[in-house]
Length: 392
Image 1 (spheres, rainbow, N blue to C red):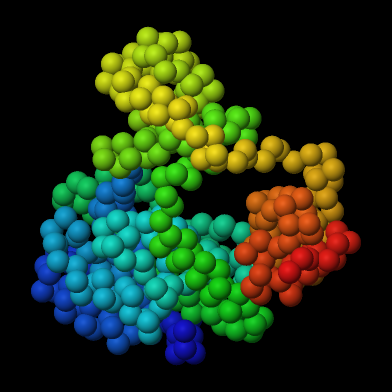
Image 2 (image 1 turned 90 degrees about the vertical axis):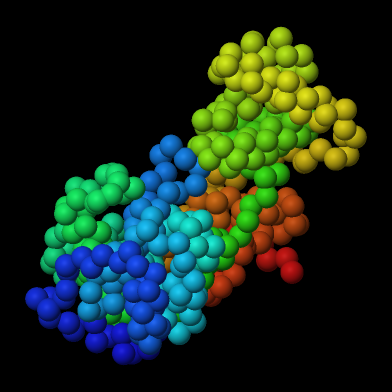
């Protein structure tokens, strides 16, 4: 992220190209990628659909290079080798706004996670524009430019795309490098660029991490109420649902809702006829999957109990809740002093980790997220306010 990128912050708004340039040729894409590989930064974005599928269906890839807004057609192009290489080229920063879903799109379509990257939503929070600000609002605040958002939920898989869709997609990257340049200038002035970079590296790591099917049960509401054997059943059922959702490419809840999984785990039903008594379990599901479900449950029930997962922690006690309040007061004061949103310093799950850690480790500990730059800024203060030294 060299200082050359500040040049974008000084671009005349009237000279910024906003017309969409359609790219549906592999030859043209390869030529553009060769050209883009010499740039310090590129604006990137995606348009996709996912409401009826497990995996995102990519309708468009957008790239802005300061000279044009290129709309790459993933339906017409089969060979993305040059683009994949560009997206992981270490000396080209990929600039994107609120990137978590887009990273999933790139990973699914191309098998790569763009890096290095700078998320302008994160950067905006550290530059004083508020937490989780949308791109349209950020653009208005930084440049006074308003862009339409009328095509957010349109059909991006249709061909041809409408002129309104093309314009909308182009505008998502047209000004992004200019915003990037302005944010870089602020971040360098307040010496927070490294903070943003660390947070963006965390996003990349999370996007690359593969969560095993055996861990999804921990996300089920009220799973903490289940016994170890019931948790083992829930674990197996959640893993089955995850596999089915991916195989059939449908949302998880279309396979089975979490409440139904919980009910099955609680009942531990090993007779197919009894499945009809489970709330939320449809007759057609029992007809197709009933035998599979009772076999999964029966297999878990007869396992050695030593293989069952440990029980999940219950909600925080009143005492732990009071500790969280004390920690939040410290964070609020620090955030106000720094001029930062409290959310960028400490998350809800970080508070919970700290107050629960004493019982598990014999002393309060910081979660991994508070071990980087946050440790000196706020982490050590949180341990001190609890009056207990952190264990090694």
